[in-house]
Length: 296
Image (cartoon, rainbow, N blue to C red; front, side, top):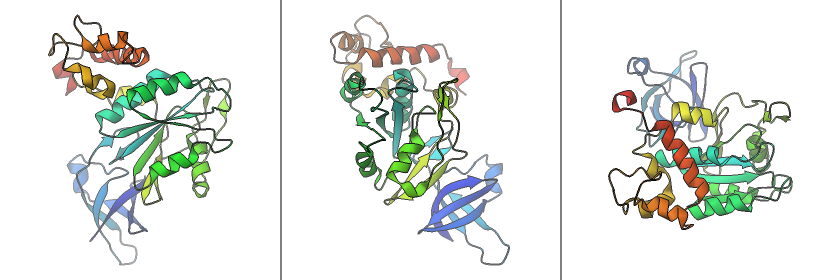
């Protein structure tokens, strides 16, 4: 028996990294009966079968610290949210949905702004997210600005990179780690987005940690697979924390436009970015009418 981490899964086979050796494994049949599916990032115990033609087998999946449904990733430390200033244009609602999901899952969100060589009008976004308390990295892929800073943040962590297609996820990773040789694609002028060039999720071992390129990780996936209900949503906006327990009607305050709401007052006073609050209200309105029985 040995322990390791699942770094890739294709066609029912799982590839487990154990002390820098990759083992091809099948999952124990009981997992299917228990409706448990191994995930990339899982820490597992597996048996090694040295007989010719025999399979190694995952016997146990250790408790997950967190998990995402799509892409299927477990035990993440950091989520790098990649957004380009242009082509495609930065969308604050998409960023805010991703940061909220990360906060909800206890994953540290880090915002990366790319393509700054094509447009220098991005200070407003730095102000929004630095004021909210996030780490923000400005990245110019042409001259490697920001690449060293991202590289340093990856050390010893399990990190995923996400964002709209075309924002430069794979290009950025290739600049930091050329040996990865991840596929990249040009942005479609007709559709305003790039081709899906990454076919599966895989962890790559770097600097004592792992990084993952995440295909198809969009706002639609977040809405469909990672719903945050209204009672939890305020806790997913970290800059609300100093104010939420000071509202006039504490237990009933939605922090949308309620009388005596300290969050709304902080927005008016410039202590919370109006842009962030607009995203919060949009997300709140999406889930406000969901009943308890519908959450099952």
